[in-house]
Amino acid sequence: MLKYQRILLKLSGESLMGDSSDSVHPETVEFILKQVKEVVALGVKVGLVIGGGNFFRGVAGSDKLGIQRVNADTMGMLATVMNGILLRDSFNSHGIKAKIFSAFPIGSFIKGYNRDSMLKRIDNGEVVIFVGGTGSPYFTTDSGAALRGLEMNADLLIKATKVDGVYSADPKKDPNAVKYDSLSFNDAITNNLGVMDMAAFALCRENNLNIKVCSIFKAGSLKRIVLGEDEGTLVYCS
Image (tube, rainbow, N blue to C red; front, side):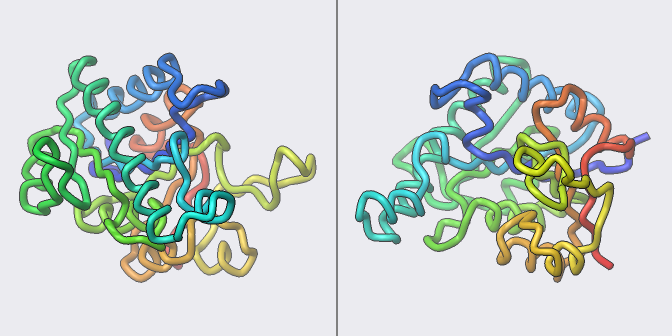
C-alpha cells in the first residue's frame, strides 16, 4: 500500500553524470529512469525538478568568470532546460509519458509554466518535468523544487542525492558521522545540516511539506520510500 501517492523528486544536474567526468552519463540516466518507472508503475504521481550543474552553475560562473550574477543565474536556468529535454525524451523512449513545464517560455517548443495544465498532466499519470528553477535569479533549484512541490500538492518532497540520507557531518570526511533516520526542521536548522537552501527549507516548513533525503543511486530507494519503508532521512514538521 502506498504511503505517498504524489511526490516531487528533486535531482541535481550532477546526478546525471554519475561517477564519470562527462556532462551526461547514459547508463546513469537509464538507472535513474528505471527508479522513477518503478514508482510510476505503482500509480504514484511524479513531478521532477532538475538542476543544471552538470552543464553550468550560476554561482560558480559569477565567482570565477566575472559574469554578472543575474546573467550567470540565467545561464544556469537554461542549463536545466537542456537536462529537462534530455529527461523528457529518455522517459518517453522508455514508455513513460513526460511533459516539460518551464518557468519561462523557450522559443516555440517549450511553453511557459501553467499550473492548471500541469495538474491535468500529473492527474493523467504523466511525469511532469519542471525546468528553469523559479524563473528568477538568486534562487536555487531547491527553491524551485519546494515551490513546484507545493503547487502540485505533493505529499512529499524527495531530494535524491549521492548520499543515502542526512548525516551529522560529511561521511566522506568524518568516519564518525552519524546518519539520522529522521529529524525535525528545527533540529536541521539548529545543527546547520544544510538539507536544502534556507529559502526552500523555510517554504517547506511553513507549508508542512516534509522532505525525504535519499540516494538516487541505491536501487529501489524511491520505491521503498513511497511504500513507507525505511529509507533515507525524513525531515519533518514538528
